Length: 561
Image (cartoon, rainbow, N blue to C red; front, side, top):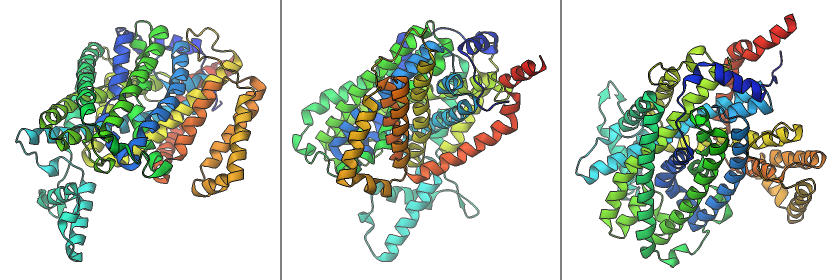
C-alpha cells in the first residue's frame, strides 16, 4: 500500500459519475463562472486589506499588484489546463491526486480547507467592520464589544492603561485603539470574564451558509447581482476619485523601499486568491472543459486592471501614511469632503463583500465532498441533499468552521495565515503540469499552457541571477536574513536540471518560482501555524484516510487476484 498511489483521469471521471455528486445540477456557464471569480477576488481585499498594503509600501504597491497578478496568471494557466483535463470538483486536491499521488493530494486538500476557511473568516470580519460603519452613518450605534474580537480589545485596553501610567496623553494613541479599549471596559461581565464577540461576522456567515445550502442556482443568481453592484461601486471610486488625485502624493513612489512594498505580499496575494475556487464548481458546469479555463483568465485580467487603478487612485487622493485603516475606500472620500460617495461605498461594500463570502463558502464543501468520495474523509461529507442538490453535511460543517472563529479572532492573524496554504497549492498545481506534460498525460486536454521550451532558459537565467547575487554580496545577506530562500534556490537548481532533461515548459516553471519566492516573504509564525495544521491533517489521514481510501480497496483486490 503506497502513499504515492495515484488516480487516473479515467478513474476520477468514473468516480464522479457513479457517486452521489452525480446528482449535482449542471447550471453554470462561462459568464456565471467569471462572475464567481470576480466575486471571490474582489472582496475584502479591495475594500480593506488594500489600505494596509498601501500604508506599508506606498504607491509602489500598485507594482506589487502587477507582480502578484503575473504570478497568478502563470498559476491560472496551469489550473486551466488541469480543469480542462480533469473536469471534476476538488480543485488542486484532485489535480495533485493525478500528478503526485494520494499523500500529496491529502496535504493539498487539507491546505485548501484551511485556505477557504481562513479566507472566509477574513471576509466575514471585514464585512462586520463595514456593516457597523454603515449603521453609524445612519445614526445607529452598534455596541463595539459585540463587533470586535477579544484579543484586539484586551490588547488595546492594556495599551491605554500603560499610556495612562506613563503620564502621556491618550490622544497620542490611534482613535481605533481608544474605541477598542472602551469596548473592553464597557463589555458585559460574567464573573471577571469580559463578554466580547464579533456577532455580525458570525451572523453573516450563518446566513450565507444557509443560502449555499439551499442551492447552486440561488447562489449563482445572488452572486451575479452582487458582482454587478460591486463593479458599479469600483467604477464610481475610479471615475470620481481620478478628479481628486494629486500627483505629489505619488512621490516618493516607494517610501519604504523594496522591503516596504514586499511587506504587503500577504495582503496583496490574499486580494487575488479566489480564481481557484471556480474549479471547485466543475461538476456543476455545463461545459467545464471549455468554460473553466476561459473564466479563470477573464476574471484575473479584469481584477488586475481594477486593483492597479484603485491603488493609484487611493494613493493619489491622500498620502499613503493615512491609509492604515480598515475601510480605505470610504475614508479617502471623507478626506476630500465627498461624504455622499463615502456613504455609498460603505453601504455597497456591505453588500459587495458578501459575494466573496458566498463563493468561498460555496467552494469549501465541494472539496470536503470530493475527498470524502475518494474515501479519505467520512462518507457523510459526500452526502447530497435530495431536494437542494448540494453537499448538505459538508456545507453545515463549513458554516461552523468559519462562523465560530470569526466571532473571536482578529483580521491580521487570518490574512497572514491564508497565504501559506494557497502558495503551497499553487506551487504543486504548476509542478503538476510539468509532470503530466513530461509523461504525456495531457495530450487530450482541450486547453494547454502555451509552450515555451525552457531547456536552456531556466538554467541560463539561474546562472545569471545567482552570479549577480554572488558578486554584489546580496546572496549571503539575504540567506542570513531569510533562510527559506535556500529552498527557493535549491528548487530552481532542480528545475534547471530537470528542465534540461525533459524540455520543461517555461511558464509553469515561472509559476513555481514566483509563488515560491513570494512564499519566502511570509513570517515564521505563518509557517508554525501551518505546520500545526498539517500535523493534525496527517494524523487524520493515517488514522482514517490511508486505510479507507478507495485506492486502498483496489490495491487489496489486485493483491488477492
